[in-house]
Length: 75
Image (tube, rainbow, N blue to C red):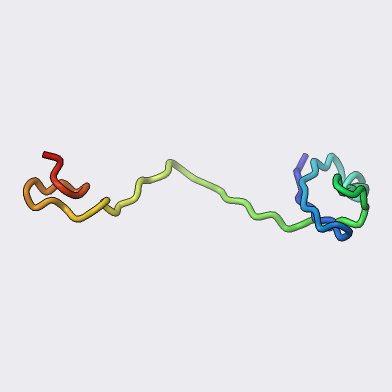
């Protein structure tokens, strides 16, 4: 059962609706003003594979004393 995003033409309210069937999609009403003049929006989604990788950029220039890649020498 997909969740669709809608926008109401009457009050411009944006909302999400769980739609159980295509016939139910035709009966969607705005929860704010109860208007049936709604349009389904195109949704954007993000897919992720694997683990997130940390940034390769160090926090600051390396220390000239100990070559700490995180910046100034902690000593």
